[in-house]
Image (cartoon, rainbow, N blue to C red; front, top):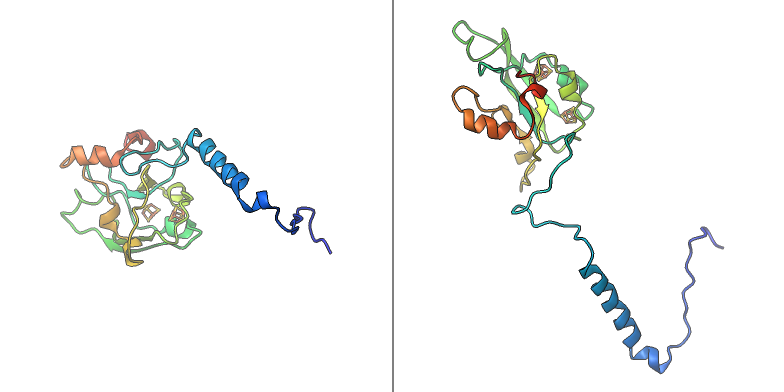
Length: 184
Ligand code: SF4
Ligand code: SF4
C-alpha cells in the first residue's frame, strides 16, 4: 500500500556491465561537485570573517547603565515574569546611603542571572523592562564546554561604565545607537 505520493520506485534490475563500471555515476558525482565549486558559499571563515546581522537581530543580553554610569536595573522582576523560558533569576537589595552613584534606584539587583541554554532570544525581557535596564545586543553567546558556562551572571552582562571606561563602553555598545537603549 502506498502511504504518500512521494514514494520512489527503486529499480532492482541486475546491473549491466557498463553500469558495473560505475563510470556514469562517478561522472554524475563529479559534475555535482563541480557545480558546487561555482556556487555562492553558504559558510564563512568565522571568526576571521563576521556575518553582518540584520538591524533587528537579537543577541546576547546587556545590563545597561545610565549616562552617569549607574546601574539602571531596579530588580522589579518584570523581565523574569515576561520571560517565556523562565531563564531569568535575580535577588534584590536595598541601596545604602553613599551608593547613589552606583545604583540609579533605591533597589537594585544584587544577583542577576540568565540561563542562556533556556533563552530563546525573543526579546520580551527588553520589552518588559520599564527602566531600559536590559537589551539584547548584536553579538551572540560564545560556545562553551560546560552547562555552567551558559549561566550568565550580572558581571558577565553589565555594560562597562561610560564615564570610567568610555572605550570599552563604546565597544560593548556595538552598532546599537545609544538612543535605542535609552541613554539619550
Ligand atoms: S530573550 Fe526571551 S527567553 Fe531570553 S531571557 Fe529574555 S525573555 Fe527570556
Ligand atoms: S532588567 Fe528591567 S525589568 Fe528586569 S528586573 Fe531590572 S529593571 Fe526590572
